[in-house]
Image 1 (cartoon, rainbow, N blue to C red):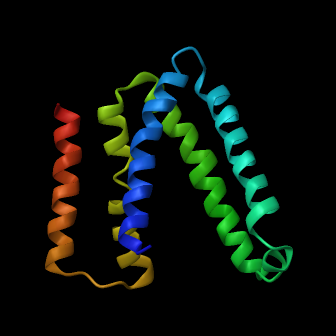
Image 2 (image 1 turned 120 degrees about the vertical axis):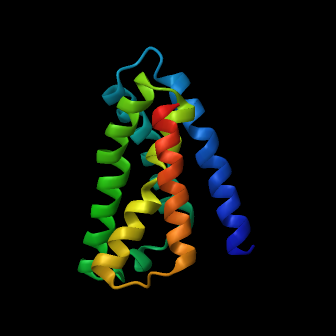
Length: 140
């Protein structure tokens, strides 16, 4: 399957999940909700370990790569999820998800500043629309 279809599938799942989580958070504190979400991640991890990843593949990863990826997982799946669940608990899905999903803007800016990535007119137009969308959500 091509990267396009994988990305579409990811978008569909990421689009459905906040609705499920919002419904789950109705009677649950955000941190308790995060605990149960992490149980789902552990289940997925166990499935990877049992059915998909070979032990030699895990051992073949260098320490730096493992630490950087683990740090990314901790920040995205734990720290940011705490922020997201607090926003989702008190806000509307239609506002919280697009705002929290504006992370490409942050990645774009950091990619230019820290990684020396290119800056061009199409990217500038994309950034303009992201910022415009965030502003419209704020005033709406």
